[in-house]
Amino acid sequence: MKKQTLETGVKKQVRDFLRLKGWLCFHHLAGIGCYPGLSDMTAIKNGRTVWLEIKAPRGVQSDRQVEFQALIEGHGGEYIVIRCLEDAIRLDADPNLVRLVD
Image (tube, rainbow, N blue to C red; front, side):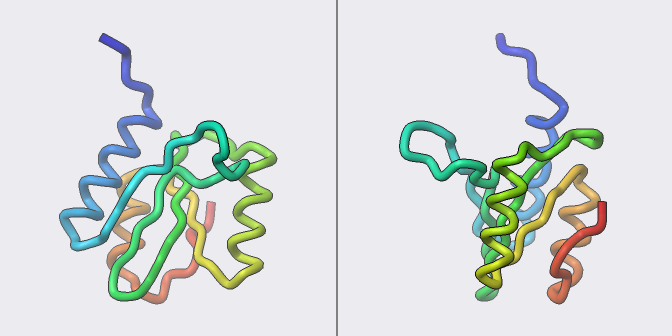
């Protein structure tokens, strides 16, 4: 059996929590034809769409992920780096939250 990374555990916690709270939440699978730097997940609730990059507590975005974030935000989209379940709880609790501070 493949060992689960800390980041994978955070992804599952975030996905399960957001789904429990009524978000449509799905993972993006990287592969051929995938946009470079695409976020790990998208969550949608009440007309709000949030692009989520899930990182381990000390994880760092790649250059392509930073570029993708700038692209999304440049088009008025919402992009959040989530490092723990508590970040997802704050996202769900505050409908006006635009960005979590690292």
